[in-house]
Image 1 (cartoon, rainbow, N blue to C red):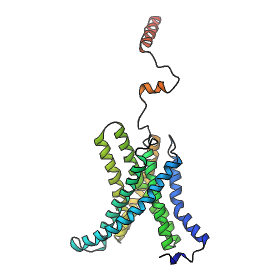
Image 2: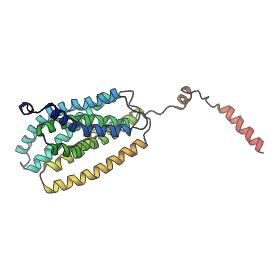
Image 3: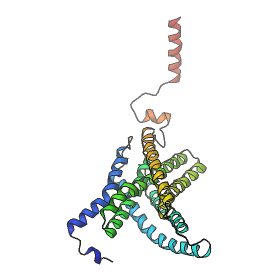
Image 4: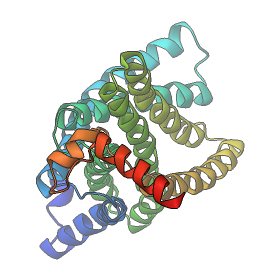
Length: 279
């Protein structure tokens, strides 16, 4: 398996690693800069990237199992056509990969004290997803040793993973807000959406490519253009409208500052005096 890499020189190996991880790193920087209220600690972001790397291992195992399930379904239930194979495989890949990402996203960030702004959900989800995408990209680049494949994935696949993650993080942040408000039903619904929405987007992304049809390619590029426009617009809007998950209570504002809390009785007397003076 590793014989094909023995002939690669150290500079070539470094070059392949750089072109594999650079697109993901650039998008991480973009998201980090859009975290306008309160930056996340480097340690937590590294944990998110590590979560994405762990998700790759889980996805590999589950996708090996899903391949057998797809073959079984094509033998027993569905017609064994390329289109059916592409659709079923894309569905399983979307569910498995986005599920693995969400699992580690939740494990590493949900109870973390730094998760205090709604936009943090997008930041964490994107770092997990791009950690996943970067390692996956390393595998693809080394296996193909193709600059063309690296460029194609840099322009399409890596931004695709980020796009799925933005919607995962959007609903993930909303779920955290719902929990803070004591709305358990809304929390569960939005956590479900944090899984379902990116899984569907991922399945569409892969499925339109895997059916090997001209119509599939047309749908793919239309889908990508619309998705990218909406996603980058969503990032800007969510960044500008970001808010605390647990806004400080009225009393807390004065407890944590040197401001004196207004006395309602004094304020009322002051108002009456002002009215008398005007008369």
